[in-house]
Length: 99
Image (tube, rainbow, N blue to C red; front, side, top):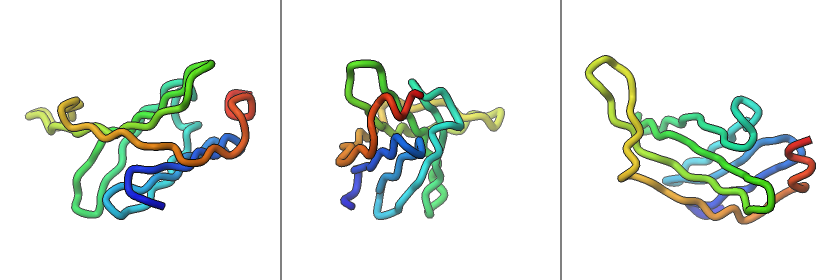
């Protein structure tokens, strides 16, 4: 698998993707299936926001966004840092995913 590519498994509701030579597996049931937000942490300690979206009659999409640490210890999404992924394989169907 190449960097910034992903495989969506509609049967297990998981997405696997590669970013900066690291492989990630995200359980999409941990959020809203239509618009799933999560975060990942790279080996170098960088944390990025993860967003998977899939609307009816559209193609699924996966993006990562940078995060800025605020003084109170919380994070704010930095949309100037973004990565869009190519979903190279979809296992199952949209109906499998949502039902």
